[in-house]
Image (cartoon, rainbow, N blue to C red):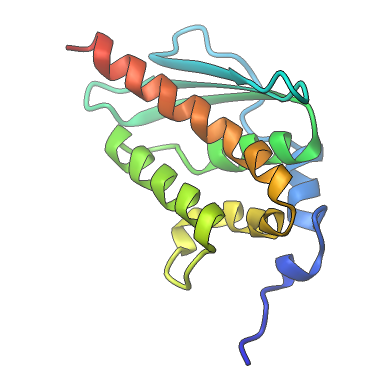
Length: 152
């Protein structure tokens, strides 16, 4: 029998989730964002806003992440934002696909690049909360799509 990682034993509000909730990373707005998107869930009031500043090669050089609502949305927004620095938009998109897949099917042993986002695997036990964990990713995906359509 495989041993469960500690974060799965902590329950929905494990230490890592609560750390990101209490001490959100990248909590500020950027005045010069290249990518900007906001998603809102009208059913619960959760809101996630992400901004990215890019260099000339479309690599993330600065990140802003602001969330309102439950601890899951706030932690997920912080966790996601902490992984984006220095990545290209293609790498950001690939990371997002892996995170979405992990939330749907469970994370594999090779998903270590998801970093603190792996702590959100516990949310899979509470299907109604999966949308909370994925809302910042949805915002990010929409922001990238809008940036790419405007960049052409």
